[in-house]
Image 1 (tube, rainbow, N blue to C red):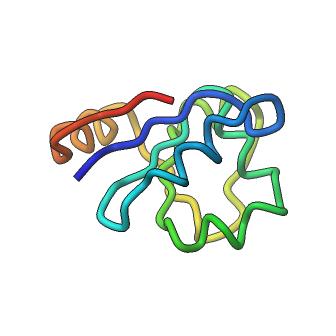
Image 2: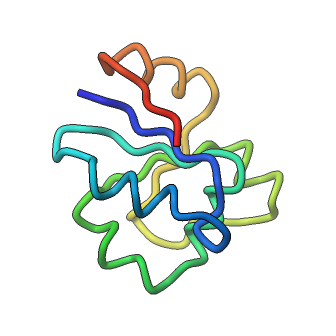
Image 3: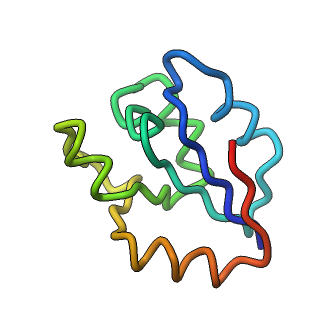
Length: 94
C-alpha cells in the first residue's frame, strides 16, 4: 500500500491528475498544503469518489480558511498523518 501525498493546487498544477492515474485501489491519498484547494474543484468530485476517502491535513484546511463540506474528504491531524505514513509501505510526494 502506497500513500500518495499531493501538495500542489489542482488549479495550477497537474500533480493530482497524474497521481490519480497511478494510484491503485488499495493506496491512500493525502492532500496537504495548497492541494487542499481540491475541495473547491467541483468538476473533479466524481473522479475522486473512486478514491475515497481522501485524507486532508486539518491544519492546512484551517490555514486557508476552508471547510469540509462533503463526506468525500476526511480531515486528519499531524499525529494521524504520521500514523498513516507508518501504515503504508511507501510514501510518494507529488
